[in-house]
Image (cartoon, rainbow, N blue to C red):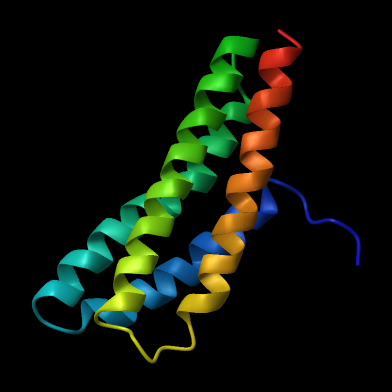
Length: 118
């Protein structure tokens, strides 16, 4: 299978996060609050990658991709918290955790390479 584009992967991930958050948002209390945190972080990854593509300089590119990496780390936290509490038996969380871990590795490599080349 050919590698997927770094612009497409965070978008597809965000779609999955939005769908999970819609489901969580229908529940009261902590589930709704946590879904808001997850929604913000999980959709911000792709938004920052998109912004980085139009960076005005190498430093701007590095900054946007570094923010995307930070958002991926935060997303991982919220997913792990949901898995440990509200969604213990959910089949939706493991694939999301796997994808966000892969995104973290990819984004980290991009940031490191960009810093080395600047």
